[in-house]
Amino acid sequence: MGKEKISSRQAINIIVSFLVGSTAVLGFSSSANQDSWISLVIATFMSVPIVLMYSRIMHIFPEKNLYDITYELLGKIGGTIVSLIYIFFSFHLGALVVRDFTEFIQIVTLDETPQIIIAAFLLITCFFILKNGIEVLGRLSVIFLFIIIIVVALTFIFLTKDMKVDYIKPIFETNIKELFLDSIPILLFPFCDTVVFLGALSPHLRSKDSPYKIFVSSIFISSVILLIALLRNILVLGVPTIKMLYFASYSAVSILNIGDFFSRVEILLATNFLFAGIIKITICLYSATKGVSKVFKIDNYRVMLAPICLFMIPYSGFLYESTMQMMEVLKKTYSFLLLFEVIIPILIYIVVEIKVGKFKKVKIPEEC
Amino acid sequence: MELLVIFTILFVLFILFDLVPIFKSKNYKEFWIYSSFLAIAYTSLILYIFGVKIPNVNNLIFDIFKNFPLR
Image 1: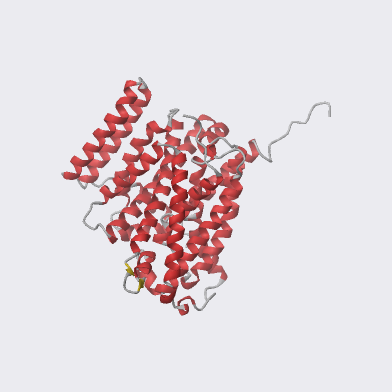
Image 2: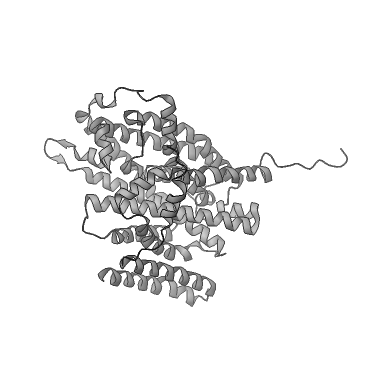
């Protein structure tokens, strides 16, 4: 099988679907209340230098993923350590999304179905997508993202009659310092989750496509989609109601009722979550599988795909004991994300620039 | 019990359609690595189905990182 390549449009679709992923339904933790949309905007701009750093690493090593890069720069031992760290992070992130999804499905629809069965169906789907290659994921993401955008836009438009502008007032009630602090969790989840693409995307971009353009476009497009969803939730439900709910978007859309015949459309939101969740889990699985293949020196990543998928099923089940614990842990482990998504990539970036990039020492010829 | 049967069938299918071809193509290194991961996955699954609590990585992450709150 030849090298699998995806277009920049497909790459943008994958990244946007990845970012919208679980966030569109779960929402994000915010103490800024009705000003949380401002925190989202601030987080968007704060994420730009970080994704530019990821893009720079991909630009310097165009045909290599993070695991190849760390082995090349840090040697066998250093490369193995960093690879194991990111294998764990990608796998753990994928399992978290699986668990979010199974909790959501169990709470809103299939309350008698064991979560492990839902996880199995989800992961087998992701397995077959990856088995057929990243190009399949690219083509799927084009269709999925189109549907996601249509659903978000239509639900916003149809819910305008149920919106109360007073719910968003007073604007800028929260001071700037609080807004900045509040934007950090949003920055880490979901925007900096794109660190996973370092292990997955780079070898599949065509040489003419710029990773800078792909990442920055994706950040802004996903931010617009999340902003529309967030404003819809705030204007329809109000902040006190949102704080009581696990899945505010689902509850907001359930209010939609036009002419007594167009109602119960919240299933469209579940479909959104399904599509975006599949993309996010597939990318996490792909990154973890690539890492495992690199560490064990296996040429074809597809060999390790099935056992990693199958291991993720019980692993996602062991993560939490309840939805309440899931929400509580998510709020208190942002520093874990900071370490894996910002601090370690900065260190890798510094090593990349020193050894290969701008800060590489140039040998001055002796005759000078 | 039903869950155990369902997942055992699933694992057997993966062994038949994924692992056996690897063995037949004489990629013994990949075969043993695949088998090891599959054994770990199946063991974890059995433990989960029978409600056995195992040390959870997530709890460890929470215990370490709750001391460094960002908010």
